[in-house]
Amino acid sequence: MAPLVPDLIGNELNFIVALLIGIGFGFILEQAGFSTSKKLVGLFYGYDFTVLRVFFTAGITAMFGVILLGHFGLLDLNIIYINPTYLWSAIVGGLIMGLGFVVGGFCPGTGVCAAAIGKIDAIIFVLGSVIGVFVFAEAYPAFEGLYKAAFMGNVRVFDSLGMPQGLFAFLLVFMAVAAFIVTTMIENKVNGKQNPDLQPNKKYLVLAGIVVIIGVTAFALPEKQASLMNEVNDASIVSKAEYKLITSDELAYRLMDDDNDILIFDLRNKESFKELALPKSSNVALEFIFGKDAHKKLSLKNTKKVYISDSENDEKRAAYISSKLGYDDIYILKGGLDEFKSTILNFKMPGGEISRNDADTYRFRTKASTVLPVLIQNAKKQSGTETTKTKRVVGGC
Image (cartoon, rainbow, N blue to C red; front, side, top):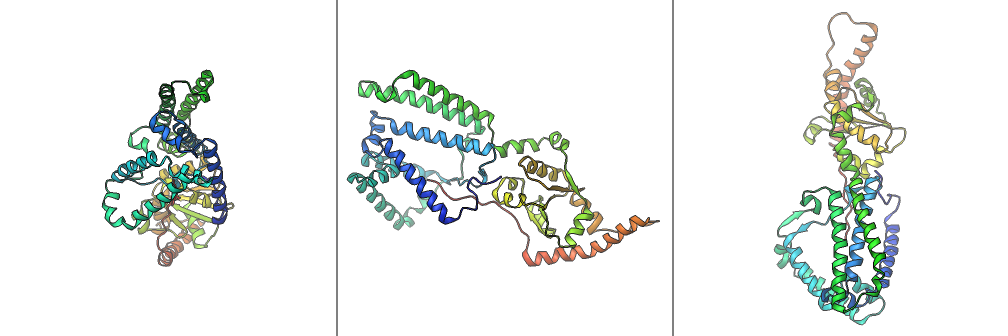
């Protein structure tokens, strides 16, 4: 799976892209009227719910963007950074920030937007935020216990609720539509008249219907990784697929020949991999195949990518996922490592009469059983056992 932003974009260009996105975001905030403190305060006093509508809509749009890109394999969901949850700091910080919103009339984003166009109150608000950050940083040792209390990890709401991603997406859309209707009723009652920006009503009822339909589509767009992992857990599906095989003899020959056109992915657990790691092999889990690190290796042309495990079952699962993601030149080790060990590493010359063809094969295996253990030990001393793990991209608001 390719990342949404290719690695061809360097850090310098990333900063330029971030600047352009920031300018666009600020322009939208300004056009939505968020440069005035009355917009944000109106949310708390009930006379203007524009902020709720805009940010709820933005959240739903982003959510479905991630679902769509993840479903079609255009976004690597494994490297999306999820902010860790510290329960008590979130509660206390939320209360402080909410109070700041009401008193100052801005949030950090709208405050910077308003300050950029010269609003005096916004400039003071931003300066106050900077002072607050400085005070917190200096007094952090005193707050550290509270800040790190009740750590819950990298939590996703639908995981915590024990529900599928599609169901959560639909419920959130339904909640948004309900919130838009209820807040409009509150707004009309507080102002004593209907909001002219929300007229005619029929147009917005049609838009609400479209939003609900979009929410229903979430059930038909499961996350690509979750969908494929469910498929490979069905043995009947995996067994019906066709796979390219590499024999133990060919793999041994390529390793002894120091073939640079082969990559080996070991699917066993870390303990087994440390005990026996073949040269040119990396220890990976099935989830690794969905990451951008895997994309760099699995998309290489004119290179055999070989999955190995103790038996063929795990190898077939990995090869099945790789083929569904569009990767070519994927092979599995015939008979798995169990067969490789018995026929190569622990080879013993059989007794009785041997044909000429078998004699050549046995001669090679005898040599391989002597050479390969040395290569394995040398590779282990030089580089240690390599375990491949996809790193998350740090970010967030």
